[in-house]
Length: 306
Image (cartoon, rainbow, N blue to C red):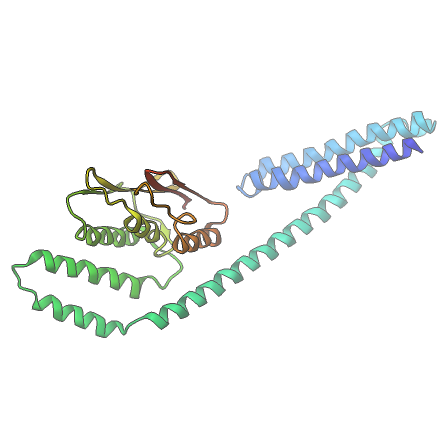
């Protein structure tokens, strides 16, 4: 009886190892990354390995333990064990792919639902764009031509509104436009700060040829300006860096903060919403690291972009 239990344990353990090895290692590391030749080769090797190992065990079990010398060799067990592992392997793969398809459909449904909800809220809060831009143009021409700074400020504000009203309706936007919006936002915020603030916006020259979800980055920058320190005896710093390395987009924001200040729950509701958008849009293709110390608050975001 003990040998029969051992036979079941060996069979099921070997089968579970082969199936989970394929599902957890070969599929995500090779097949999902389009390394089909290596992936298929490893799959076939694992199936053949199971058949050989189990056939050796069956030869010992039937030939030595049960005394049936006709079944002592592995060749009498190979076909059976290979057909068994192929059957369960196909069943497991089918179940796994069906589950992945279902989860993908659920994710798409959630994205569409949140998109519709966001659009409805946006429409409720939206002013008539024609009235708004006509008003801005009127104010622009009422400003004295010698007041270049005021005209440039109003022009930046107009560009930001145009971006929000007309260009953020799609799922993604060219990164150049998103960066341009951020630059305008930072320039407008600088006008509200005095010389005791050091505000840097560093952007590499390769910010092109890929897209991002619109208005994805600005909550991090808004958060930095909202929670920046107000020191009188030293500089208050906000530093924003945007760059790209290979297929990875990198975005870093750091701001000094008052010692007694605490940014609740990593930035509050705004950053919670961004985290949700990242999860829906990038799933496991992003890295978000938010750190807070008594002296500063920092955000490091890395996205895998194509």
